[in-house]
Image (cartoon, rainbow, N blue to C red; front, side, top):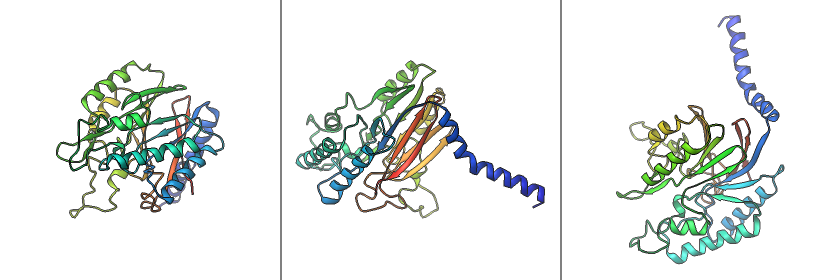
Length: 308
């Protein structure tokens, strides 16, 4: 490489390295709209480690400086209701509420996770039970519906229900037809000068969805299964392309962390409070939550917090 080319390359590399601090400096001059914690995949269950771990995580959020304005719960609040008995599911929900009531004083905006859904994987499920499926989670999380919308500052939050029952077995990441109609109508009615953030338990777009199993297939393919990322991503992408005020998508589910910038939208996958289901780190990622700052110019920043 010639000296001139080396200098040019070096300056370019230095510019890239300086970019995050430059962005941060610019955001310091932009009015911050609000700050919140995104907690996901708590998977609480009876036991010393999960109970103390959840309590410590919520305490850590409460003691943040500067303080956060609210919490977004990205789903999988309890270990599992899919295959649980009614008695077991009730114990898990009671434990979740006990810890939240003791440790949390912030407003919480919840999202349904796949493990919050009751009865789908039971050997002989009773689909006539009023609590079957997502009804129980909606009740326990005090949600008005399984998907909903709220506003903070100059931002509109759209919280999706991203887990659908797969008739062939298991579940699939996607939104159903009823929800899709609602989403299209909601996006159309939000003024163009407001910014939009989409919350889903299962990532809409994530490289970590392909890294969950920490291996490639026998033929070398990197597999992204339909229960790890939205199988309807291409349709959602086409819809999102119509709305340049959609700026951010937030998710959990895969217990890993990534940040994907694609077609003007930042997709954040935000790890897990429980890490490796209360057995330490999952792959390279310790138990953690995310702290977001959203700004009045449509930008945002994320800090991942390992709460110890």
